[in-house]
Amino acid sequence: MNVQARSAQDPVKVQLPHTPLPAYYADEAEHTRYLRRIFDDTAPDYDRIERVLALGSGPWYRRTALQRAGLAEGAQVLDVGIGTGLVAREALALIGPRGQLVGVDPSPGMMGEVALPGVELVTGRAEALPRPDASADFLSLGYALRHISDVGAAFDEFHRVLRPGARLLILEISKPESAWGTAALKAYMRTVVPVIARVVARRKSTTPELWRFYWDTIEACIAPATVMDALRAAGFVDVRRHVELGVFSEYTATRGH
Image (cartoon, rainbow, N blue to C red; front, side, top):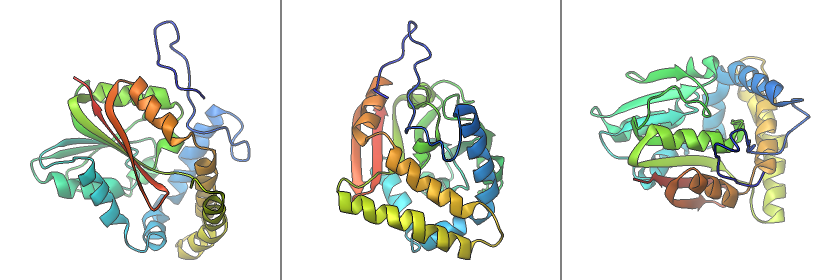
C-alpha cells in the first residue's frame, strides 16, 4: 500500500485505506455491498449512539475542527460521506445563509436520516464524485476515510472538485501510538461500545457489529504519514495533521493554484 502518484501509464493502481478484513467480506465487491448493508441498517440509531459515546461533545468538536480548517461564512461546501449529517450540521452553522452545502454518500439509509433544510443530497462515492470540476470552496470527509475503496482515486477526485486555493478537512480516528493506548481503545471499541450500542438502539440491527468493524478498520488503517503523502501525491499543498486526545486526527490541505 505504498503511495504512488497515478499516471496514464499506471491508471489502475489501487491504494486501500486498510488491509482487507476477511472476517467481514471476501473481496472488494463484497466489501462495497457490506458497507452499504451495514450503514443502511444502522442509520436510524446512528446519531443516538454517537451522542452517548461522545458524551454530547461531538457537535462542539466537529465545529471547532471545521473552524481550525478555515471554513468561513459563505463557502460552497462539499461534504463527502455525509452520513446522517453530523459534520454538515456544524458546517451549515459556520457558512450561514450565503453558503451552500452538498452532501454525497453511497448509503440511501444514512442520507434518509439527514434533516437539514437547504442541503442538496447526492448519491455517490468518494472515488467518483458526481460534481463539476472546481465547484467547491471547502471539502470535508468525516470519519469515512477507512470506508473508501481507493485512497488515491478519492484524493484525486477531491483535488478535481475543489477550486484553486480551496481547503480540505479529513476527520478520522487513528490508532494510538503507544501499545497500552491501542489496547485500551481496542477493548473499549470491541467490547464496551457494542454493548452500549445494543442497549441504546431502538430496534434490533447490526449496530453492535458496526462498532466492532469500526475498531478493526482503525487498527488496520494506513498510517497518518501515508495519508499525508497520498494528499501530496494528489496535488495538495500545506498538508498538515492536528491530533486531539491522541486519537482524533484532523488532516488539512489546500488545493494548489
